[in-house]
Amino acid sequence: MPCGARVRRVAGPMPDQAPDQHLTGRQPRADKDVSMTEDETFHQLRAICARILSVDPARIAPDTDLREELDADSLDMAELAAASEDRFQLVVDLDTAKQARTLADVASLVRAGAQAG
Amino acid sequence: MAERVRVAVTGLGVRTPGGNDLRTFWDTLIAGRSTARTITSFDASSLPVGFACQVPGFDTGPYVTGKQARRMDRATLLAVCAADDALADAGLIDPSGMNGLGGPGGLAGASVPPERRAVVTGTALGGNETAEATLLGAAYAAPPSPPPSPPGAGAQPSALYVPRIMPNASAAFVSMRHQILGPSLTVSTACASGGHTIGEGLRLLRDGSADLVVAGGTEACVSPTILLAFHRCGALSQRVNEPECASRPFDAARDGFVLAEGAAFVVLERLEDAERRGARVYAELSGYGRTSDAHHLTTPDPKGEGAERCVRQALADAGLRTGDVACVNAHGSGTPLNDITEAQVIARLCGPGQVPVTSTKSILGHAIGAAGAIEAVVSVLTLHERLIHPTINLDVQDPECEIDVVRRPRPLGPGAVVSNSFAFGGHNASLVFTSARP
Image (cartoon, rainbow over all chains, first blue to last red; front, top):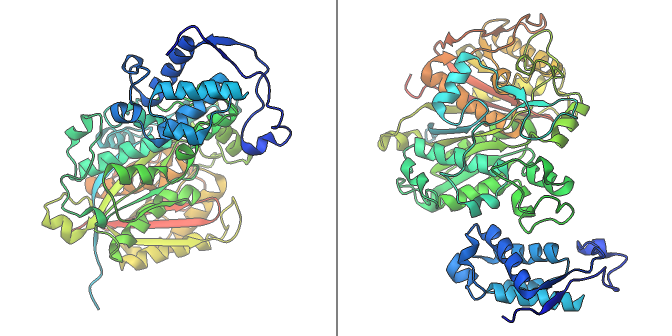
């Protein structure tokens, strides 16, 4: 994973989401403009993932197969996607998130979500 | 006509304010030690009623992994631990097996095929702690079951929100842990849930739906919203300066119940099966009654007709008469209306002052959907130990309650123990326990 690149965080709600956004369960995003390196993103995702899987963060590398090596199941992946949305204030494609196998995959989703925003 | 199936109680497990093992639990009851305390697990100082009966020293470590615990509300954790203990107590799983991180994993000791095992759980409020922490913020959540979202997540529910709040979560987890492939059901009849689960378990065995049943109730509802809500509908005692004196069933100065939490489970199997495998038989579950008041959402029918029919039905189901009752473990919530109604029902059925009556809620408070199951365990132990625990805080008995309330531990006479549970909504449950081989 290249380090040093910047992930732009979503700033404010997407134009097509108001005004019935609450029906989708998604909250309007806070108007923030905070940037973060990919390394920082990974470390934050790793902390979230470790909490969800109840494992030592040191066991999670970018290419660790979360399902095969850490017994993650579909509910874990859904929780990881939702927690990522909360943490980074963006929208993650849940169907794609279900297919993710590594934290690098999840980080890609987060970047994609940020770009979509 | 074939002889009716007789059902034995062979295992007990508890998580209660009075103890998390049977010996501590029973000792607390016999000593008559109130478990009501000022709440310290969250800031209750702004609440009009800031005391309750909570489960102390609840350690889930020997039972579930951290990841499993994250998926469970406190109510589910209480249930899973109590159900494991009941199965271990019945000799169906190895207690030492619970030390493994994966839990017992299956009924290795049971010869009952997975398809013939059943579980029935009861709860009134399901995963209340998770719901409240998610909707109001996590400030009130207490270990060992913190909400899956970090404090402040507030409006965004975790992906675990639904699995943690759903009322059937305990039944689901118990079935998964013990490879229970037969019926797994949840009953929700407010304060009678725990009684109904055990009665419905009895019926599963009688009707041939299962050969082994794990049944019980759980509740983890000591939270700001539930305390305030019960207070506002006038159900809670307001003796904030004397929590230990607040639960006083049948006393003239009673002013409501004390909110509690806990879980209790029993293992039920056919008496002949239990005897064949050499199991310890605590008691026989002989009768079950369930009726409805169809009267009012929160107050009992003042004539107690639904309650009376319930007890009569349970005794008839057991093939017993009112004269065969040796003790009534009353619903005895300590609310002005319940206690008068229930006392009058008992006096009508058995004669004024003719049968010893006790209220477990005087000591353990009212654990809502778990109460009936906790009191069923107490009733079983009453038969097993041949001793009735006292009702505490009975200083001046309400003259309208013409019953013999047990004030000090009293030997149990010959006969049956009846356990009553009456609920918001007018749901009534009565269980009749007898000695297996009198």
